[in-house]
Length: 203
Image 1 (cartoon, rainbow, N blue to C red):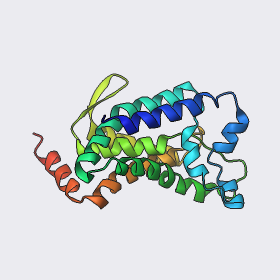
Image 2 (image 1 turned 45 degrees about the vertical axis):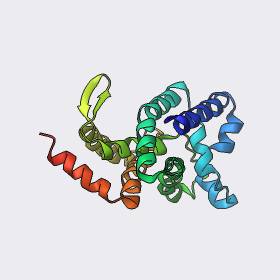
Image 3 (image 1 turned 60 degrees about the vertical axis):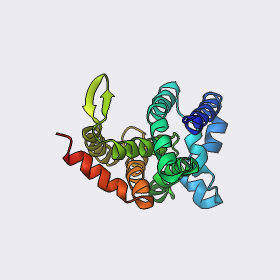
């Protein structure tokens, strides 16, 4: 089935997140805690932080987004790369690489922690935009082209990443989006040509 990996990721993430909502110790053990990564070499946190979420809203937003976009990217990768393992690699690297800027920025701050799969989910969304820039995305029931959503999302993320006022790791959103665009292009540069063709021949 085309959704096997995406659904597996969603199920595992939901189980771990939901059972951790009232378990502060487990959240602390799994979170991206840059200071402990640096001091105790707990590199596993780059991955485990994507398995826990702050609440049902946080979890639902990420997992519903992954459900709607993940299956599409999984199928695209299977066709292009002849293996679903590229999708799994893509998701795991999305978790890791989107948190590296956060680690570098906060590695000397013992009080900073962050959780959530937003970096990897952002990578999936922007890979989908790369493959189909004129797909319709509904934002609060308002339809808009995927490419326009991408531009607005990146602008908003860049702005909010400089505010650091709401506790959300917007840096992970931003770098996840960048990774989501670069990963397919590195392995198959012709995807970039297809993207440009779709942009210029839509009308």
